[in-house]
Amino acid sequence: MRLYYHPVSSNSRRVLLTAIILGAKLELITVDLLKREHRAKAYLQINPNGKVPLLEDDGFYLWESHAIMQYLADKEDGRALYPKDMQMRADINRWLFWSAYHFTPAVGVISRERISKKMVGGTGDPDPAEIARGEALLFASAQVLDTHLSDKQWIAQDRLTLADLAIASPLMHAEAAQLPIGAYKHLQRWFAQVRALDAWKGSEPARSSELREQLLSGPC
Ligand SMILES: N[C@@H](CCC(=O)N[C@@H](CS)C(=O)NCC(=O)O)C(=O)O
Image (cartoon, rainbow, N blue to C red; front, side, top):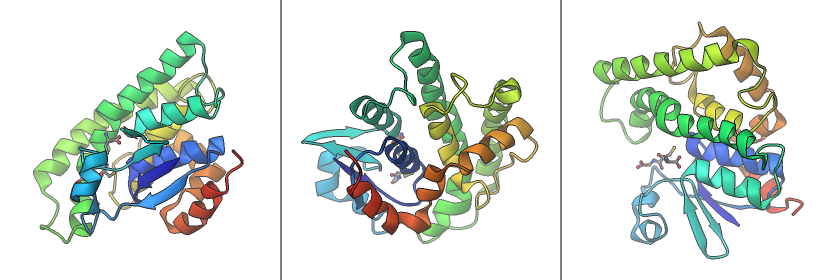
């Protein structure tokens, strides 16, 4: 299997975390977003969205990071991360959809203004109106998550699952994007647990060359 990704992409990060924990064997291919490789004709033919990540498995191309996580978990028999039981799975799926539709886009509005704009050559300073819009979205989502975690160690099923990996990933930019989440203490406690995972450390952008070796020589 091949993963087209970028080391600082949080949507790629959730797939990397999943792959590391599952011990999946993956060839990592960097799509250089700064050089706009994701908009090249050849790449658009395999992912018409022009985004990372993208998984290729024996000629099958799969885009959308949450769908890739589910596919890897099923393919690598990752029952602990993604149980087969219908209701357990539905519990996790609801958080994956919540991640894709609410939490990740909320963080994305702020990250785009404070990080991505500078990375792509800078079209100017963060737009205060966009920051305010992102913060309003993020406060609403962070409150839901914080309340949910007030009596739970992990998001679903009382153990680490795809839900935690999906939702923690955009927080990789918490400091750089100055995400206003310091007051959410249950969320902070949970995120500290995710950050303590070997897989989190192993998927840090700075370790992408080590990761490349590790995933390529994975056990399966
Ligand atoms: N919903 C998609 C979002 C993918 C996405 O937005 N990826 C970003 C990197 S984190 C990207 O490729 N951006 C380039 C662009 O939009 O031009 C997923 O979860 O895979």
